Image 1 (cartoon, one colour):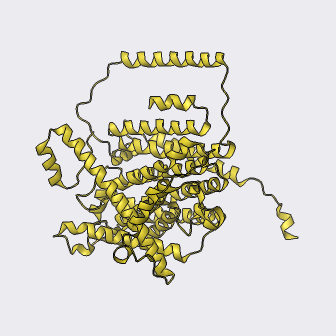
Image 2: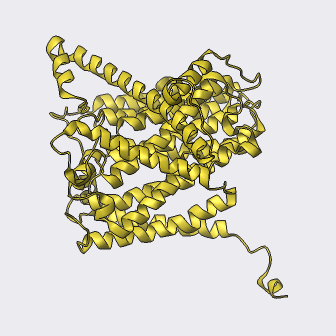
Image 3: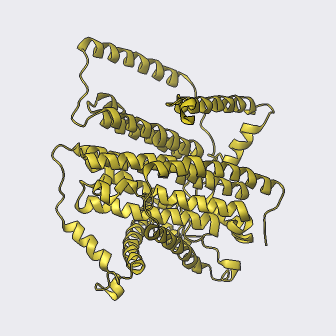
Length: 162
Length: 354
């Protein structure tokens, strides 16, 4: 996973780096499977591997030719990126190791029924409010997409009657 | 991680009695993988043969009947021929992606095969998100097609891949929604539980009108998702050569070809599981003989496969715009209304149960 993560950044062919990214995302889905979060794993596969990667591939297909290569950026830029990444990793690792994680005694699989009840419960620990907010957001996005896709009418209505 | 690997209890117990636990489970996984690979090839080859015989039957020909009894070994001979063929490729292709593409298609087909309940025991991976997992996996197969089309560096292949991508992405919605309609009755995504529910009548009977509508939508969009005629825009022979696998030859071509037939089998198997009760016999007539389940399952699945072949040799090919109009302007709204009707029926207890 880490190898393909590095490869996805380092590869100079655009579609190849997309495929390495796909490997990374599938690897994350695999980790979710290993810790028995089946639902989350399937979501990861559908949304990221199935949805986002396919969209990215589509846009690469439209704009990119097979013989083109990405240009290599300047040395100073690469150095700065490397330093920034290193700082990020250091912060991340120190946080993980400073927190005292509790080992779960027995693994339980979260079923989809439990997730559904959790989403709809309005008691303490329920997720009804975020759920509603997200559905309103989704509705707004869908309406927006339709409006954009509809566009302007090419021929005005009055011309048709003539 | 506890994978419920429950293929035939006796082999499981026997393995664990002669080996330590860790080794036994690894050996068991290997055996299961081999068994499924075997099933994969046998079903694929058999369906290729069946397709040729059915098409011949529809066109008043005889079809392959020389190799073996009634030509049953014909596709095996073809596979051996393809194995021995030279692998040609284009010089300017992106070699890495070009070689990778067939495996995407074949692995996603193989993974989907693992969750299908052949009988009560013969069911390798019974997770509680069964159907959702199937939908998730089927969305990965299209990446292989897109990659294969792009990395061949060939205009026809690229056009075929783009068409295939458009088609698969739009028809996935219909597949998901029509299955969701049936989930409303079962109340579970786990395939074994969906089968259990159908002991009181198959779901297509339980859900009567909306279930039949959902079944029709599922078969239409399933045919479209597997890129078969009348929706075979991706490999329309008269326009695009062979579509996305124009540049592939030998065994790599065979992978695409096999995966296509396996996908057809998977769509038929999902339909048989969700609508027709998988390994359950009609009215429970063979309930005392559980090993007959495989017979019922294959019978139902193969008759649905025959239905899809019937589509192929009956309907003319659609244009791209007709294809997209059918999905977005007809199937999707019908589907959404259908879900509401089904919810009402389940809520008011209007389902038919025996």
